[in-house]
Image 1: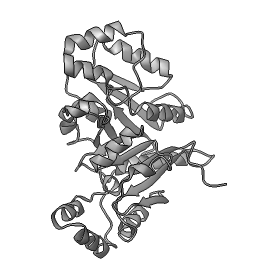
Image 2: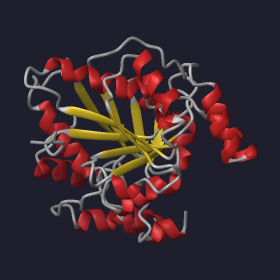
Image 3: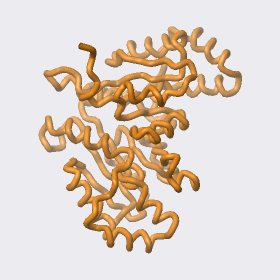
Amino acid sequence: MGYDLENKLVIAISSRALFSLEEENSIFEEKGLKEYYQHQLEKELDILQPGTAFGLVNNFLAINTLFDDGKHIEVIIISRNNAATSLRITKSIEAYNLDIVRSAWTGGEKISKYLLPFKVDLFLSAYEDDVRDAIDAGIAAARILPFEGNQNEPISHQVRIAFDGDAVLFSDESEQIYKLQGLNAFIAHEKENVAKSLPDGPFAKLLRIISKIQTHFPDDISAPIRTALITARNSPAHERVIRTLNEWGVRIDEAFFLGGVDKYEIVKAFQADIFFDDQDVHLEKTSKETPSAKVPYSSSSPLAQNS
């Protein structure tokens, strides 16, 4: 029987999200693919520095050591690099002792078509087109933003993830009303639909999978995964969110209904390994001090046409 990814949390990550490859990306953009490949081959033995999602991946993999029945979390490298230039990346993985043994190197081919065969639940990449394709395919995905903070912190046995609400955990239906019709129309819509669960957003399935992993551990602050909802909603629009989460039967450890207060200080205080949001206005601030990632709207959303 082959190795089964079906009942695991599968995280696919691009090499540029896991490691700092901004210099190499500049070579690619300024001098072209041939120069980029040559650079990677010449630097094969130079270990890469951690990138934005390194701490998140490191801490997720550490959780596997808490289970007696094998790995519950699988991390797979899926990259547009070719096999020849992959050696620098795999040697860096080995140098940091990351338990990543599966990879795909597409040589410039689109990545999105390989996500479903790998049973991917979360895809992180610095390349926006691949991320949007993944969202369109129904997979939780986000574009990793550059982060220059300390990525050399010790491995933690706790992953801390902060989510925005609308257009991330929940669909962008309510956000469409807010952006296209205004605040009063949004509040009226939420009051009218307070007893109706919010539709799933791109990260709803991921939250359910995380919540299932959490059931293996005590419901306290020492649990290996801790989640937070950090949303611009406030009273009375918060009620529908709470009812939805209860209806889903998922666990959110901390919830913040900010009503327009800046998110970045709350995200920093939560000490998130990563923060997922759909709006640049929040991410521009959070990404300076917290690893952050932008969740794009699906291609079919009216918001995508106006973003």
